[in-house]
Length: 153
Image 1 (cartoon, helix red, strand yellow):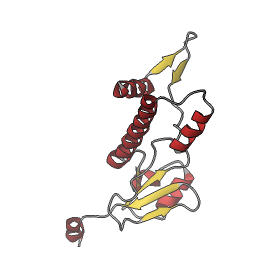
Image 2 (cartoon, rainbow, N blue to C red):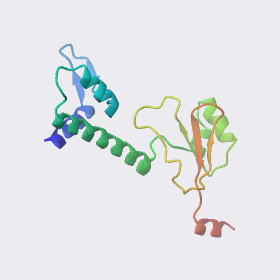
Image 3 (tube, rainbow, N blue to C red):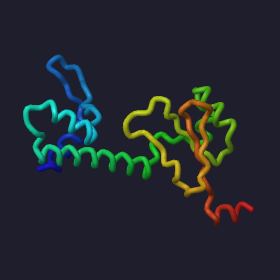
């Protein structure tokens, strides 16, 4: 049953909800409470939060957490190539790209939403990460494989 509710919530997030006036809404659940906040809430309730509700809640948090991390790691959403950034209309992105070489990917996190991020360690522990001043615009170097470096020489 827990997974059915999780599935229903995930499906609702994908749907356009329309009220009686024809106005469209997107279902955006609020961020969940952590365990401490959940305990504080429970203190103000006339009874304990049922175990199955706590379990469902943890299941939802875990599913969202895992899903978002996996998406960032697998798909790198929002990453821009050096070439794309050089022709960008955004002057900060363009300026940052000019200070880097073509081996970098950039991401603009100035207006980050839940699920945005980048896999900053994608190319191993020696991945070079850079930030554009104090702005939330980041870049990391795409390390060439041993064979790519060998062929280039």
